[in-house]
Image (cartoon, rainbow, N blue to C red):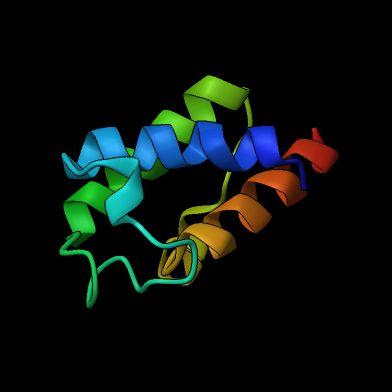
Amino acid sequence: MTQNTTQEILGVVSTILEKEPSEIPLDAHLIQDVGADSMMALEILAALEKKYKIVIPEDKLKDMTTLNKIVSLVETAKKRK
């Protein structure tokens, strides 16, 4: 995974969560530690699918718990397209 991709995804997530990127550690649990909710998770999923022109199966939503896991899901989806 590239540092650039991580920063781009952090930008998307921080915008949706209305937080500064520095407030979102890469391994923090987005719901428990950062204050996200399920609607925000759906927004993040949709925004990343649009940005990268990929499809992330909705059943993967439950795996999108940390920024590192989101980056991993995006990288996997990019390889599949």
